[in-house]
Length: 393
Image 1: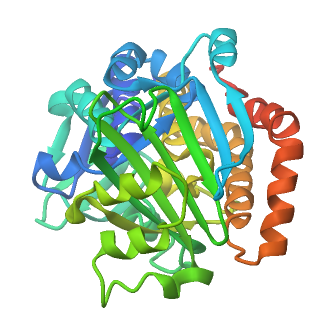
Image 2: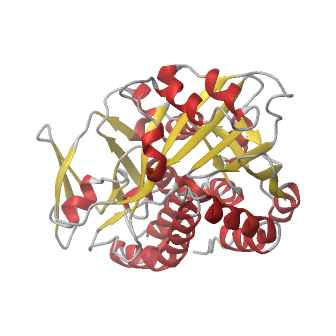
């Protein structure tokens, strides 16, 4: 008998959908309740990276091939200074061959589409969660329209400012931690291998500024402009449009960065303030737990937010299908995932802090450190952390 027969998932993002898919493949009835009413509102966002660990996790539910087909394989990760000097260049293919899974760049909307199609009729839109109550026999989730759903387990997969998390803590907890920078994300139509070669993820570091970009397909390029709070005064969107402000801020950066920004439609640029939560807080209470950003939100610097949500969803689904009780499954889930996600949160925070300074001396020392260590020590450490998935249940 599985540890749970019926599971309620709040939130149809990457973590919630992956969890439901994993459960349903194990024969557990899982239903996903999403507050947004239109499917199109779920299929938004820019591009991002799914590293090998995420692809290995997706393989456990048979979705790795379809996700790989929707994106572009990344073969190099190149770090440069704002002057265009190469700081490090990671060769990705040998590690992909070693672990048996590629690294993929793709549209977030394409991943959501694949997950939504796989979850199918399990997803219920327009269901705004408000509260829950649990007892010895199960848990009941309540919704804004007055309806209720009864299950064995309730999973909050509803993001950084999770309503399930809030209800678990009786609506009293510290706010998320602001990382000190903004990510301006966009996808632009920009064909041309000579401008942006397929298969390389570029990561440029400046004085309080960073710029990331890669090709998603023959016609499109995904990019992130990361601007520190210490240079916020350069980006006056009261006087200028987003594109105009960014074009001025990155005017002297090496090509093709000015061209990438100038080619982007104004309404395609989405500024996102970056937050996480320091590790250490519990995720579970009896029959209720959290997954993805509701449990372990992290900054974007390791490109592991989605990957860790997928890993957690796969792990939780497997444990709920095999544990002797829901409570035992949730205890085991949190124990297995806590240290790994904490390492991801802390490492990502530390990398992000390297991009905040604007002083020439500090940034010069940082670049020298990257030249000395990123092709060797940092590469090994990154892959050691990434591939220690611990998938056993």
